Length: 349
Length: 65
Picture 1 (cartoon, chains in turn purple, yellow):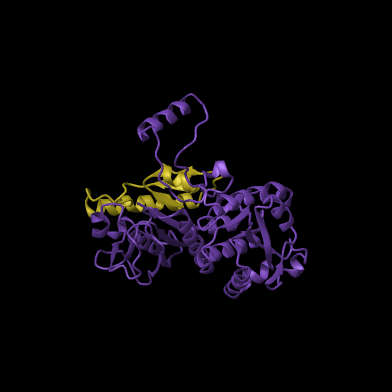
Picture 2 (tube, each protein chain N blue to C red):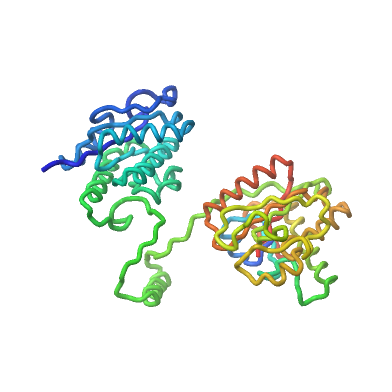
């Protein structure tokens, strides 16, 4: 029986070229197996064969993403593979990100199966789990044996056109994709069973896992509010009238930054809400009800606070993805810090 | 700090200083009151928010009064 042709993507470290000092290594294609390809090849048990290995330095890829991707894609294409496997990258962030990017591109351009392997906290997981099957690995190369077994198994299943089971059954990281399935019991019955198990203190498995949120340590308090620059941020969607940045009424993909210079009150003539998740009547009639500019101006005048920051930030918190919200938060915090803001009041509807 | 109506959501997403607000469509206002009364309600909430910002906390804290 003819075996499938596999191309393997690895970084400079696993290729034995070098560590950080060689991280700027340019893409290179080699015939056959290199480094961990040996173990991966063995795991295919003759059903597939690594015909070529593409190597790239982690920093080189990160710093030249567009050209490195294009070059790597061409190298892979020349081997005429049936599937591409990248890593395992374990908990190496740049390696994970690079292998995820390569797999996404190969899947899109060559339309062949792709498989990666990473530790669940590798940043490459969050970025590329929707584009590729990423096998759950340990955080270091100690888990190489187990990782390549799982990667080989999923690659072969994909190549054979077999159905891939759930993340638990197959050992890959949940992809965040929804799939319709038929079950014998209706939702209500399953929910009641779960609740009964919960009440009895028995283990149960949710059908809708909640996202995991970050925790941050509380910041120290403001000691002299009279000197503090206070900023307003809202998820209540208050925007200048006409919503100039077209912030979406739900599932927002961006936020707006707006000047408050000379603004004494968020009045209905100049402001409105873009939020599609609550009755906008009251917020439109008096936007101060969500973005309290009027009283902050009073308090500024009275010297209770030093200053109201001259810009405010607004988005719509309505089905907004945790990923986007996190990005908004990080960007806004960066800007507020740069502007020397001391304290922030975030308002939510 | 976070002024919000649905305190459990704020706790879930990890805010450390939380001040409960009035209602979802008007967290810092109350359209059933006169304008003056409403501004006073808003002012009290913002003062409470400033007080929260000036208070040392070691864990998630809801500032009720």
